[in-house]
Amino acid sequence: MKTQVAIIGAGPSGLLLGQLLSRQGIDNVILERKSGEYVLSRIRAGVLEQGMVDLLREAGVDARMNEEGLPHDGVELAFDNRRVRVDLAGLTGGKTVMVYGQTEVTRDLMEAREAIGGTTIYEADNVQPHDLETDAPYLTFEKDGETVRLDCDYVAGCDGFHGVSRQSIPKDRIREFEKIYPFGWLGLLADTPPVSDELIYARHERGFALCSMRSPTRSRYYVQVPLDEKVEEWSDERFWDELKRRLPEDVAAKLVTGPALEKSIAPLRSFVVEPMQYGKLFLVGDAAHIVPPTGAKGLNLAASDVNTLYRLLVKVYHKGRTDLIPNYSRTCLKRIWKAERFSWWMTSLLHKFSDEEGFETRMQQAELDYLTSSEAGLKTIAENYVGLPYESLE
Image 1 (cartoon, one colour):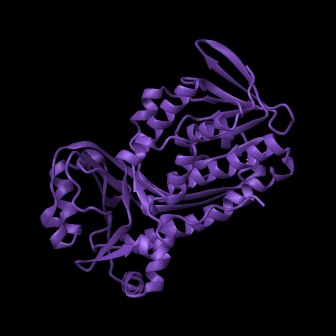
Image 2 (cartoon, rainbow, N blue to C red):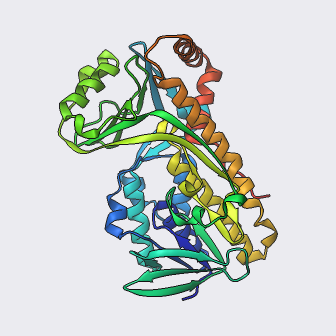
Image 3 (cartoon, rainbow, N blue to C red):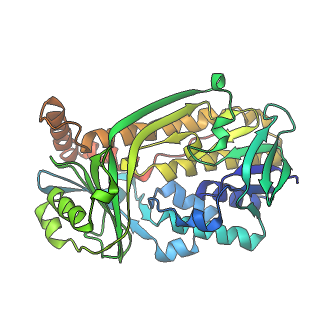
């Protein structure tokens, strides 16, 4: 087999890159270790920045998002039994976010790829990149008991934190930066109406909580729990009771509870690898960076990587601009570190780090008081939440 761009991973970043490249006449093949059904079964966040919404529209996969997605022009911070609204649109010149589940984004991209006849090989085992520092890189993989070779010009590693792409780079050629947080998020998905039309981020002495949604009839809620907590120890009743304790009284009184459709605990970490490229391999999304979910940046950062790589490859194939290839990592990392900062800051501001009410607690309280009483403070939150501008390659 032969293609121009080989993409490892059929999650939303790999599919979005493939869709954008195909619309520009750049041939690509996607290899995915899991089945398509498995990929669609993964429950992930769904708050899309303005930049990602625009990119999905450029990719021609926005029809269902436009119809079913929930545009949000504000978000709320809750603390000291009160709520403060951050007017996203008013503070950013009209920018908003879109609540539209990652599963739905993936489904739309899968259907669009099938419609254009794009090649996606699911259940491709033992994918291995070769000769990445040469002019003739290639991948090998196993399918139906046979070993297949895929020759290509470039490789896009969109296969996540545990994928083969980053592991294919010699350890002495990259540097990893990591912070592990001492807690996780226990999330519950339920077919109940959201308690609020906008997301609520709550800081409480018992720990952080988040009220989110997937649709007008499906809610997603989270509470901070210790890292050693077991999801089996949390009945639905225990979860709802704990969530109510952490929300302002007027919000808790309106909360509609119901049986969990899904319940899981996600650990929180910050992670970045530098550089994000090695020879003809480009790392994209979670393969190169992880953020705590507090700032809703994970999927959106992957989209900004896709945007950078897509525009780079268009310039390479349409204008011969191979001189821009070394700019990929630098361009992506400028935006990544800013998003890492925002996610780290939001996590530090809203979570409980100690059972003792000491200096750090007072600092959290003082910062929240300042930010929510200052237009400059609110604007800082809004600008970062809707997404900073995409960086230019030149």
